[in-house]
Image 1: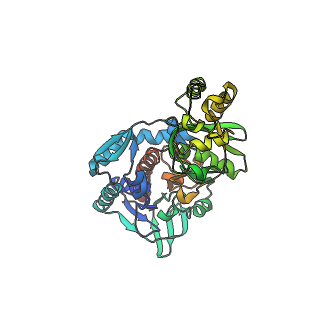
Image 2: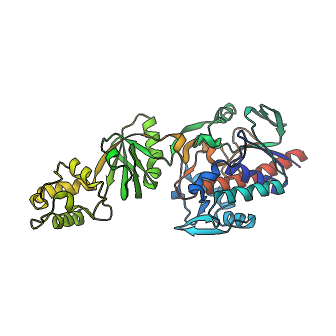
Image 3: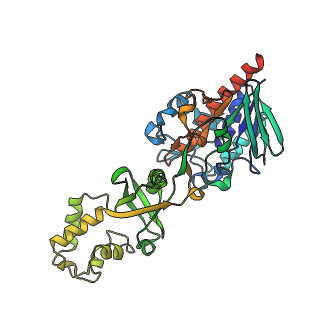
Length: 413
């Protein structure tokens, strides 16, 4: 029986250990916090959106997103659903997102831990790394409590997002010492900070808004949905979806701004017609009153002020030119992006071990035999909706399987 060491006890680490054990290896998890699966408990607002029925390459990002395809061919959506059903997780679906019927992320962690126990996987907590060495004779992982020897090793140590969970980037130096390249790691799926002074006055608003992100004058990406306005800028899924690009561009000292369409459900022509009706010369309302029902009440003073329209001016006095300019502003509210909320608030991170240095079918290092990678430590990240967990399950299963097979072969030599 070969022995596989798994560094990290998160989603990919637990899955890799289960896969390795199911394929006949002795599996050992080394986790540097006091327990496994901490980050998993916070996913999906504590309900654990563990995958998504809508799969496809467009949901994954990195320098080479197609890297995920050979992995998903071996363990994809159907295999994931079956795996968790086998463990006891009955799925419920909401807009393509799958959650456990219990509505609790703790259920997913519980069944994974039960399977680890059933398979006899050793889980060693509070084991901080001090060294990782690989040779033709095996792998040695040094910790503060001593050395662990094995035939293969899988890095499942996460990235830098939500460091309180243990995903703090502390394993990157050991990966680099093995010869690997780390693509700059930046926060992803996080809120963005903006320079404009009006944000505190509209904080707390949630509205259907389209976000277009511009980097050095070119549109990089866009998304639409419920945006949450905060004192510092914008949050909510649309902001999360574009934040990885903003974070990387800002790190590269590029100029970043966003354009908000606060009425994405109307074309510019339709909006202008609606405003013409509301600001009709027959109207006895003020400009502020005329916009009630079209925008959240708290947002109206800001929109008028930014367009230099007095709140109490009579709606019928605006005229076509000012209405035209106002509608143009509402479709393109420009905000200057100054930063993100950082790794502490990020649900995931972008960057990691370059996929050019990893075998896409086995997830074994192309530079250092016996070393494997899975999960967020690789330069692959998903959009909101369970895609990062799908990558964790799939890559963990595939790396665990191939590491177990190799470990057994090495023992038989």
